Image 1: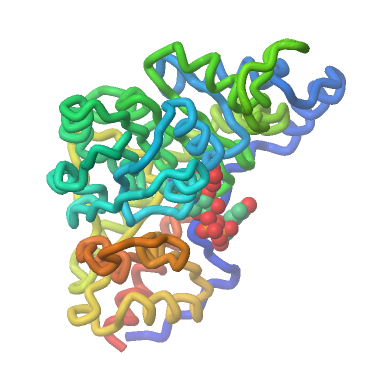
Image 2: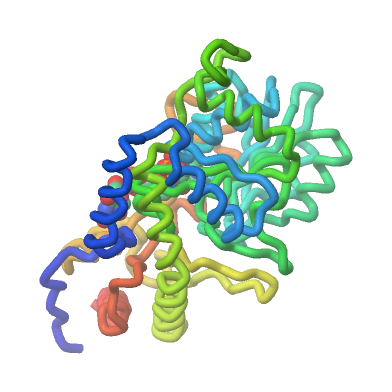
Length: 375
Ligand code: T4K
């Protein structure tokens, strides 16, 4: 097989959606002329309304990032004691519990979707359990029916970490309508972003005021102070970028869908590489393209592939390695008791995917993988 030349520029796992600069200038000019930079200005109001429509949710509250949104969701739901969650996630999920003095209780994941295994949740419920915090990993919906049934049976709250789920639908329902509260992240690395940012969506409108107070120091008006809130507001520039990106995100999803198909067609016959099957009842956003590498079948292990790809200027990511139970600051009993999460974390590799990539870039990444196997 012929030697493959490396890419002449770095190929990262993702690149942010960038609205045309002239449109950004126009928005900045509007904001400058209004002299209103933050604290729920016109951009914020318009963005909140538009986003609510786009995400097909009843209620939505904007935040300066997803992590603080998640932390404040725990406070709004008055969670205490223990919350059952997954070890296979980004540290922000678990840190939001820690910040609220809540103990994360880890539940292993399923091998077919990398999400929390609902069949193991009931064994972990104790009198101290106040909620479940599942994560829709890589935008694949969890088993929401089973999870919501368990929550009802034990009167537990459910906060879904939907950081990866912008625009995802399950059985014809928007993902942001399940559970008590959903958190979306609008970080620059997400398919839809506001530079940094996040939102909570929820069916019960009683949370409107609570979330407003929690992100706005607990104050409403000049003299009414209701609770010890923090500052987690989204500013006008973030909201304006959100408005501009809302016009672009459908096309970005479409492009990534096509690139995903090219990956699948070209990787499906490489022994030792596996990827997730799509569920026909889900509308995906194609934000990530994770593969699993079986070191015995592929002949290289995941870490070797990760390093080798760098030589070709391809910067893949090992989301989410190591799993959260391995972090030194989590006093996790049974830290070795999560065989599925361990297995996936050791085999996972997220390949570059973003709308700017060309079909030939994806073909070349596949060719490199094939070449590595044959080497
Ligand atoms: N829950 C879950 C399940 C999450 O995955 C996340 C965040 C959260 C909660 C918390 O939401 P936020 O508080 O972030 O809203 C990135 C993101 O920073 C993080 O938002 C995301 N998950 C996580 C999965 O990925 P890093 O440390 O891997 O990002 P970084 O800086 O290495 O960027 C990755 C690649 O993206 C770079 O190699 C190049 C490209 N990139 C990145 C940035 C920041 C750009 O091209 N431009 C950019 O501006 O965490």
